[in-house]
Image (spheres, rainbow, N blue to C red):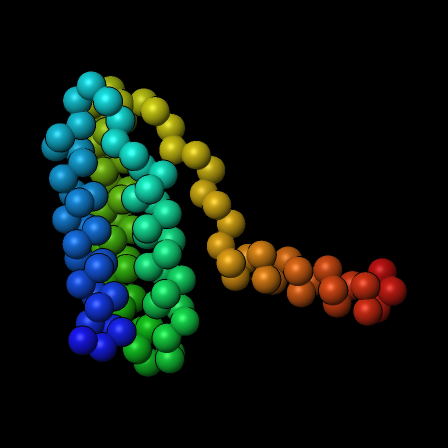
Length: 109
């Protein structure tokens, strides 16, 4: 199985799990931190692929993110109010921040 096929399978599996949480949530909030972390990990994995392969996953990832947002809205509407934590910064954001700081040091700022 290629990396793209594996990621597409993982995306669909997680999408199914996300679509299930709103229907099974009742008295306790699902672990949205885990789900959000998995979505972020899949996005980062896709971004590490060659551009054409990454683009081929864009629609699947967009659908996954929309499902996560819709599930959160359904959970809030059903009275499950446990907020998800703030998203963790991506490795790319950290690298970009480090690069900006290092560049500023080289410029003497």
